Image (cartoon, rainbow, N blue to C red):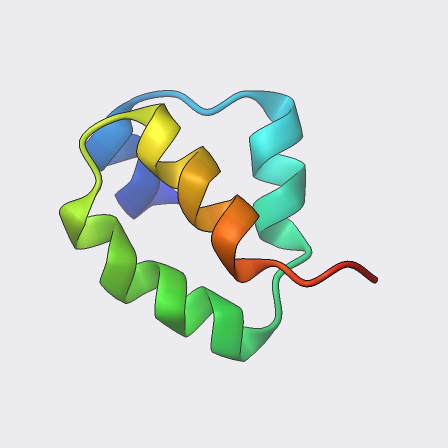
Length: 54
């Protein structure tokens, strides 16, 4: 979460909640992907592309 906040700024509560529900594997993938993020939109797009419906 701290890395994301440093990269793109404060996150909405909704995004924070979505991230806390990620599996370990998804968090590892997100940690790699965030290096390419420049906006919150990049994070939202990544979440949409990488989350499977429960």
